[in-house]
Image 1 (spheres, helix red, strand yellow):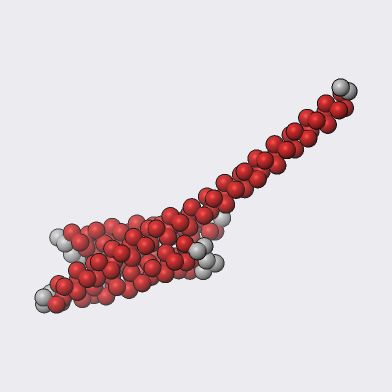
Image 2: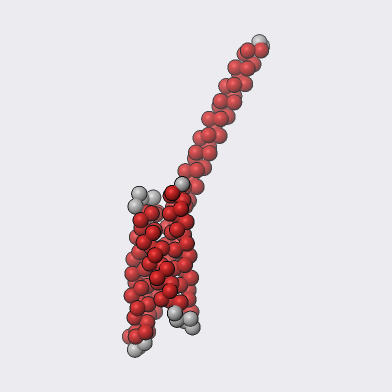
Length: 147
């Protein structure tokens, strides 16, 4: 085989490998992008469940005359709605997911503050923790989208 034929074969092989790795890397990047959305959606959905549960808990306390839980109850029900929206938008990789996540993070911060005021209540402590995790996941998602 002539020297120029060997070079042509080598260049063809290098080109094929570059195409393979370029496509593979692109696929990996797309998969990583998708995973950011899915992770955020799951954390938001978990927080929505926790906030709805905490709403029920607070509603029970308020019905027993513990009206100091009214603001927390309302924060939880509103937070659950924002979390549900952010979960849905992130799961379908909506162009509006960053807006939904930004609002969700802010409402989660507020809800967590309300729940943290009741330090001796385990249910509210769990809700606050979930809200903090959700706010963090939403902000991470927003940062990922800026890249």
